[in-house]
Length: 287
Image (cartoon, rainbow, N blue to C red):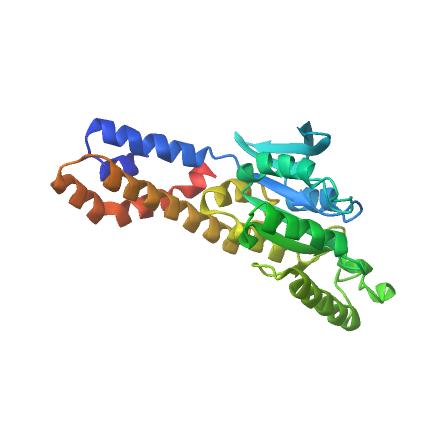
């Protein structure tokens, strides 16, 4: 931290405190991720496979008569919350009830992971719910990450390579067709990845895509919780870059809104890149 403080020594004490307050809030940011998908898609097993700590039930979140289950995990004072959202595979005739629930929850969510079964032939209820969230609730497509889970069950399932934990050529071809079907049906913003939580198939690719899909302020907190197997160089680089971008935004905010002398503002603009580099070099200490 002394290295960082040296870059800010010219700032008035009040401004310096404002920076470190925002900086500490960034480090302590607690991400919240929504999880959607019909029962039986393996949502819990997928989350438990990706992360170091098992899901721990916290509470139910009510919206009229509808409820969402809240789960959490924590490590070294960093907390991560998952909310299992209802609605997929249920009747959407009670739109007002769902709307009330989602209206309360969506602003809290950094991202929604939508889990589909790779061998499922019908996604009509998923499509209905997705259109409801994007068209009626106004949740942007870039806030959804679609995952095809249980790739080991895709036909011909008997051809799954048990030794190498990967699909046969024929299964891989069918999985690619399923991925294209998801793209056609949902028009997702992010790449669709086919995985198997049980077989640990493609979980590294999913972890990397997850960190890239998250808002910058949430990426480091999620990366910290990932199973060490999936905390790759790509994951850490993406999270570190996101952290640096947030620090850059903090500096820009100080320049824009704090009434400082022109000389100090110019100096802060000049050393901004040095401040960002210093914080990125310290990223491993925080996460």
